[in-house]
Length: 404
Image 1 (tube, helix red, strand yellow):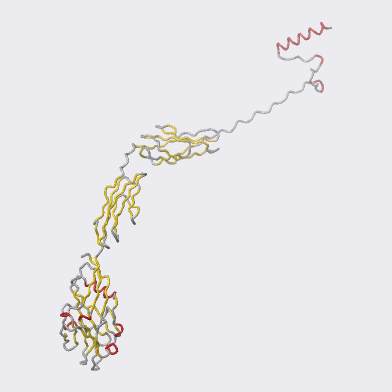
Image 2 (cartoon, one colour):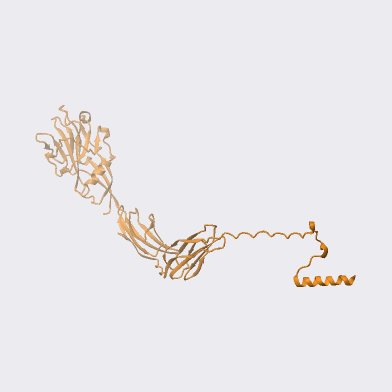
């Protein structure tokens, strides 16, 4: 029996080695570990899943250079590159800039550099999408010129013209600066251009300091404006006797012989009287600034009751030079410098109107005024209604400033 079984085994092994297949066991014997199929049929082989479809093709992104600014720049100065990309089926995830002269420049959509070498650069830009695809490069240009040597920081000039002024006058500051980033003038002026001029009117002698700055470097210069203050003077003026008198409204008017002061009002003859006083101001310098005038007409004499009968007394400016009959005023007076409506009002006081009128007379030899009662010329009552001043009782105390 052992001999009978040995021959089939050898045959099976020989067939497996030659064909790679094991023959079915004879008589439908099922190999160990396998279940026989119904009806003795062989089990069908397992079906393989169909292969997956190929992925849809990726669209490459597109790169754009938005700006290269400035297009021409000196070496060492900033150049800004700005670009963007568009991907129709994904997102932009990377950026690359490069120069035809200097190689790679950066990996951001916008970069700023001061390191570009001198020459004409072709600047290239590309972008990558989220599938790893790079766009085609786009390009633009920038020119880097040789660096200009910096202008030396220098205050070429800083002057005041004139450098000495009288109080209230104006000096002109002029300056020329090179190589500065900021220029200031103090006191009181502040930031200015590198070359300009400006008028100043300081109230006292002043050192104007100009400061030119660039980075950590600073330079200064000083221009002094000397202010000359005026001298202060006081002057007491009384009328010139030969030019001070009264005129009676007769037919014709009559000038009272000068030297006896002035009378204003009327006498018993019922003739109206106007008084005229002339003050010599030739000693006051032409550059004088009148700072105060005290009018002191407080010493006087009266006849009867001039204020009760004739109303208010007014004083007017009237430049008459040498007094004559034609200086009697017959019109409607205006522009009174002062008004007295009672004896109690005649007291010393500072008069702004007299100050202005006297200032207008500076440069002339005389300051002349007229006195008259304004409401009526005479009351025709046959009484003496007047007020009288001797020459030395008409007093102007004048204060003024002058550079002489």
